[in-house]
Length: 250
Image (tube, rainbow, N blue to C red; front, side):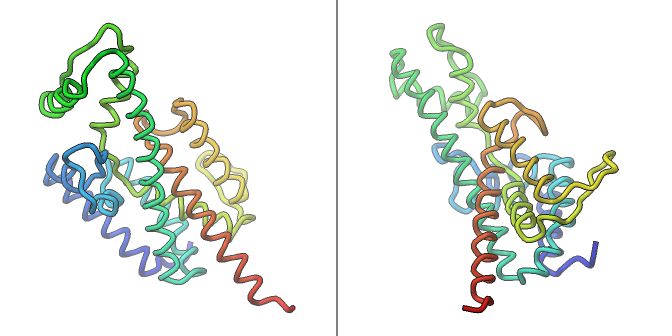
């Protein structure tokens, strides 16, 4: 591991400062800076950026910052500051966009189930207000519990973390250094970057599709990971391919 590049250093410091600041401010910080579902009154457009600097706990920020430290500097040395920042933030935005898209799909399906069960839009709005202020809502025997959980969890659960941006960095790293041998804890065998990072991506894709948690807590925003990785991969693949085409002989 070489020296930490300036951009990575600033990102590390910013995330750490946000983490301690959020812990000091408590719930107010998450209300303002976490990314809320757009139908929730707490939602603000600035949150598509600020949520990348918020984290849900020590293990959450530790993993993300460790990955940024391990892979970020080498990638920035290859790309330069501007392109590195472009991948980092575009992956973070892509992560937020895909997560919100799938949240809307789940939310709308559950909402329609309530309507089909004869619950009016006004009654649903009242339940949203109740669950937001008291944490309680009316239970309908005709509506499965998992449908209610899907409706209210999408509405109430904010998104935090740099994971989407980090997945973009990991995917870009795998494009630039596909055969670089990497090691993971307790496995003394080197694994090429394209296989290790690709395998990690597939595990997250499996969890996103099935809802079965294999890595991390059950409330992990797997679609955010997928969105960040896809943006990072496509952007880096395009840049690398065009760089090769621009420098080869015709």
